[in-house]
Length: 350
Image (tube, rainbow, N blue to C red; front, side):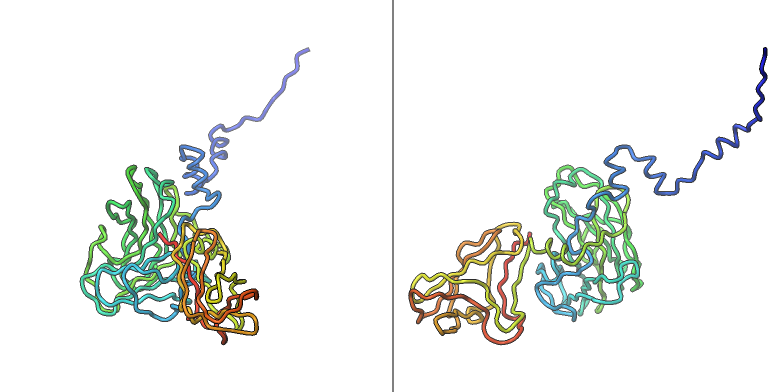
């Protein structure tokens, strides 16, 4: 017996059209990615941003919420080294009026008080630059300026190159992004938001021209992904690898138990909160800001010297006559309430 089966006719063109789902810009980028690593970078899997303190949350060295006179190549806001090739300039950690896309962040503002033919901005040196050698990387961030020469620059230690377009100079926030391939012979990597020429040269700057930046990101790949927000605690821990400051926050603030050399000297071993990048340079605000305490005495130190300073800890020797052998002593910050001018600091910056 023959059985006949009938099936409705189909329109092949319509069926194929139904299979064409819109992919959008991101989907097209994923489809065109040549390697799994490139797809990994596109979707932002893992940690992306190699800039530390890109939203200017951390300022261990002091309160710079008001404009502060700055010196060339000094650090103020953590990990950002201020730069100016001339003129009189200020730096500030701005705590309000950031772009809406980065609500809750802060920003760095560098202003020329005098104007002139100068280059003006800040820079951050990337420690693990070898990871980028010969690869394409993307720079992005929010920038505000009154000068049309404000831009992002990248150095491989042999030359500076502009990345992305310059700011319009409108005085409004603009999102700036661009890509660059780091030379295969690069011996370093530095990112700089700066008022300068495309090769980092000096340009005409008027009095009160400024550059302000936040949400700065440096990542592998060809596309700028959204800014990677990190918690305050995590950002601080990253900064502590390069710089640490302990300052007086309360009336009685001990820094550690002391061991006696003799009746005139004690030493304290102080542990850093995180392992630092290298052996740091250690200094104190003043020896007299620290007291040697014990046996009923609370005596201001008359001098100090730094013994061995390692990435893990430091030994500090305090001088003070009139101590008694056989008694326990400790060192604390001098009497009084909170005082940021009394400090112990360790610097292991690049």
